[in-house]
Length: 296
Image (cartoon, rainbow, N blue to C red; front, side, top):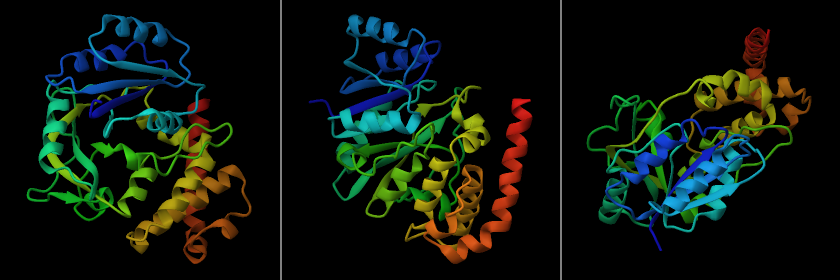
């Protein structure tokens, strides 16, 4: 049994997926499985991955499913992963040649059952760190505290213990394709901290068709998923009132988009949500305006 699964959700990314594959072939440590979750691609992704499987350079597992969105692909990945650890490398990203070796060495030295996993750094193609690195001397923390207590910025590469990522499945809403992936991570924060390592584990590129550059449109198209996410964040026991109020504003906006008149009855924080209604309405108007301009 190998120790790590690198999983890659992909949707019509055959044109760039080879960058990820080539980086995995270059790994100095081959103690990993590559799991490709094909989220309903209509391009030649299947044929491409089958060809790579025949090359036998890596142990590659492939799974096709009807399109569910990124969170649905993550659900499927976590159901199928059998290794102790897992890390997601997106279809437009790639690992440094020693990425797997760094993960497994760090875990061998510091890993234990009292943490949920580890977090490393993302960098762009030129090697520049995305956002800020972890504070020197900070060995472990929850992901929430990394961002909201220690003021770290930028996406980080998360490596989790698989038995934990099988918890807190993302809900699937009819005709929607998005739920914030951080839902699972913040749920795990309630019981565990992450080990922190200031090493680059992934090189990222934000493509024009990536969700990072289309968040406003995602917001408009997936109000039930966004509402679920904001409700969950309003209930985090370690979050302060200011954080929860921001979630309430987004919760109001998402429910205005979905025309859910019962949102005040359904909120876990009725008073906070009531105060958030004016700002939530303004956010709703902003999203409606931006998405209508984009479609015209």
